[in-house]
Image (cartoon, rainbow, N blue to C red):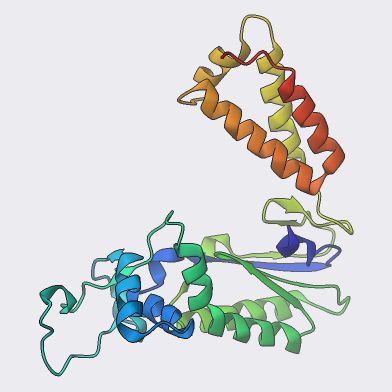
Amino acid sequence: MKAAEAHCGARWLIKVDVQNFFESVSEIAAYRAFRSLGYQALVSFELARLCTRLGHNTPRRGHAQWLHKKAAVAYKISKYNHSMGRMGHLPQGAPTSPMLANLAMRAADTEFDNLARIDGMTYTRYADDLVFSTCDSGFTRDKAAAIVGSVYRILGKYGFSPNVAKTEIVPPRARKIVLGLLVDEPSPRLPREFKEKMRMHLYYLHKDGIGPARHATKRGFISVAGMRNVLYGLAAFATQIEPTYGASLRQDLDAIPWPT
């Protein structure tokens, strides 16, 4: 929520998505992250190995962050000997990946923050979502395009690639959404689509002849319990953004005759 709140009331937004974010963080970057936290070299090496999976040789892995320095002698433990092109990367979905990726991005974040400050902008990053914003009435689309070009260059410098199809320049008077939240007003709000989706779920959950079991099947949930957990999770999320609305969602969900 804080990452979205920082951009509330902005006139312009620039949004850049990092392509294959976790897979772009190499085993070497993970090792350096552990070393930066004070772990000794061997411990850092072992932890980096535990937190990464082997990747395949691809053209974009020609960047320096993927290259091992050739050891002077072979390690006695054969698994420690690397073959070129077989470098580990952070796996998507692992609980350790977000923090290690953030540590690996610290230098890039510093450059992004400096870039934003030069142009009087605000910068935030949540995982692979980079957002720049400004309230400057003199800001132009040409300036925005220049910022995008600089962001692309910084990403490339650190071995990351932008998802060009998801890059957005959002001008004044256009609808502004950051991390799924509306930031047109002084505080973040839930978008209309979220509320319509929740209204749909509640309608069918309460409707005679449908109810939780049939609705869960129709919506593709494996079980009623799974659907129930998802909906209560969404209600908890809504409570963080709009407490009154979130509380009413919770009351509606509590009133549903969930099967035991």
